[in-house]
Length: 159
Image 1 (spheres, one colour):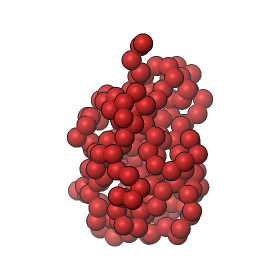
Image 2 (tube, helix red, strand yellow):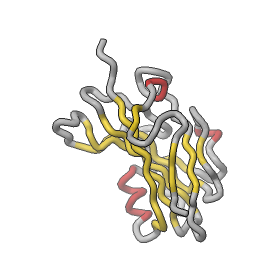
Image 3 (cartoon, helix red, strand yellow):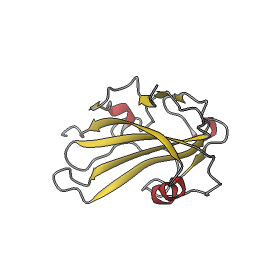
């Protein structure tokens, strides 16, 4: 069975409800995963937006959420999960707001894509402090057993 990630709040390639964005409560959506491969020692979750700042002319990938060392026997995260409620052993990295935790979609223009990427690793990563996405990806090199992704989209309502 392949590694999969999904949300009960939106479908793959579907619209992310405003509740999970800067236009709403800015809380993380519920996430569920399955098919963690045998031999996985930890999971990594990265949420990012490759369409920043404008999908018509993207210049960067904006990082919204970075989690590592999630236990391989975990099966997801509840809606609005806070740091203290993360599964035991889970560590947080820095998003592009230079803080830990979830930062919801808040696109300045156009409809953006948001990638929730789940990685199964063959090791528990050392304590990296609060790594950036790039630092975490570097530490993961050569240790990814499988990966899965869920893509959601969001565009701000016109005021």
